[in-house]
Image 1 (cartoon, one colour):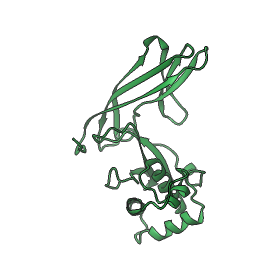
Image 2 (spheres, one colour):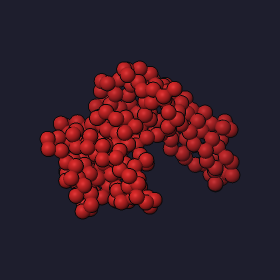
Image 3 (spheres, one colour):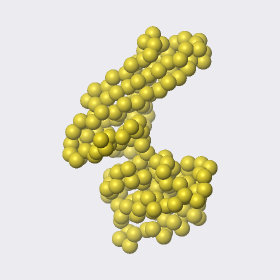
Image 4 (cartoon, helix red, strand yellow):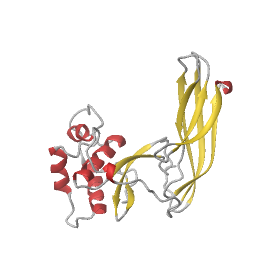
Amino acid sequence: PAGVMKQSGLAGATGGVHLKLTSGGPQEVILPIPQLADGQVPICYFIRCTPPDAADEFRLRTREDCNVVVSVRLAGRGREVQFAWSAVVLLTPRTATPNTTPPEPYRTATPCAQSQAAEIGKLAADIWPGTGKATDFAARIQRHIQLTKRKEQPRSLDALGILRSGENSICTANANLAAALMRAKDIACRSVAVVPPISQRLEMHRIAEFFDDNRWQSFDPSSLRTDIP
């Protein structure tokens, strides 16, 4: 049954990928895993390869942006390979690992979050709260997206494309729009991929993080989780 965690506890997360090897030499596949960040602590991680002999090395790698990934070395040609992973994650309202990501790179416009566009700027001004608080702005962005009515088929998932279409059911596009609106008000904001702690079959969900009061705060523009943050 559908449900939401009401307090700290353990959650299960799963994912996987199905691919086909196209060359004979060694190949590398990068797989995402639950991160040690904010209020989540991965407890254990299990990965299975089918067929088992298709992978000859699994390695944890820390990339420059501090994300940890699983690097898998493959061999063979023309083989279909399937990976399935599962993890147990402790979720807590306390910050387990401070988020030290610098905010400055996330204040400017990008091809997916066109904060400089006139349409984005007008909407940001229209829904800007009288309090001037970023948390209240996040709540208004969430409410605006929730009430949006589709006008046409979306042609892209960037902020402008989804704003013009009126579509509000695509979490990636909603996060791009939220980031653009925040940046239009000079608030650092970025799109983040998460595994939501709800009992639905979702391998990944896109939310937004904005920088305020000297820390990153998250909110869900798609209202899968309605409280702010």
